[in-house]
Amino acid sequence: MSSINRVILIGRVGRDPELRSTQSKQSVVTFSLATSDRWVDKQGQKQERTEWHRIVTWGRLAEICNEYVKKGRQLYVEGRIQTRQWDDKEGNKRSTVEIVARNVILLGAKPEDEKVPAETPFEEGEFPEEDIPF
Image (cartoon, rainbow, N blue to C red; front, top):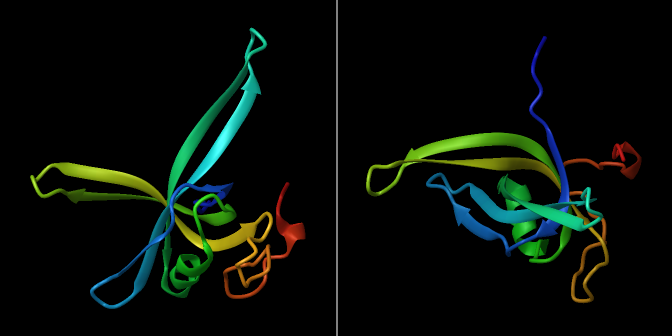
């Protein structure tokens, strides 16, 4: 049996995207996305836990995200989990877990100064809303 590495997140952008280019001139954008879990504990107290996710987009998707994704915006993000490791300037081993997005959809109300529809799929082809599993 083959394996599956697929992540679906709906959350709010924690910081504006940061656009960079690789040495080969490929665009890459990173931004943070917050997802929250809410529940009532045994004592009847409301609880909330927020997880922060590092989102990475490449190529044309990165350029589009850089233009339209803003802090506070609600997004649907679909992609895969990736762990990267490197040595920092002091020679220490470092690692990070990130979501490499292949599909990003703007959700929620459209800001007045924005020129795209409120729900815009950022992938080649459409992602019909009826395909969202919830």
